[in-house]
Length: 121
Image (cartoon, rainbow, N blue to C red; front, side):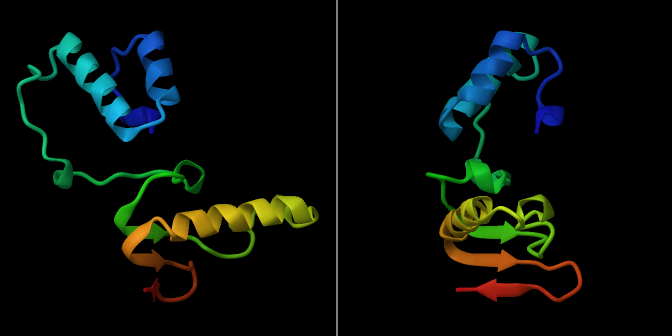
């Protein structure tokens, strides 16, 4: 995610961006940085439907989307192979997966590396 951020961000702006709790807060920070760097003039209307929001399952709490994609849902990736000996960590990953799946308003598409795509809803 940091790789797509403007290269001229100050550390304080980056910290504000990374600690922002809302999507609108992050967008405001990026717009302010873009204006400061002269990337755009601040008067351009941005249509939020012209973009794709990507996040980890850890960052999906409180957010929703029409379609949610969960790629690579297989043992060793989710749950991670390092958590298998620890039941508490497996329960946490189970909770995170449930949260990610329930963020979908219309459809949740789960992919597996060696099988076809499975669609829920």
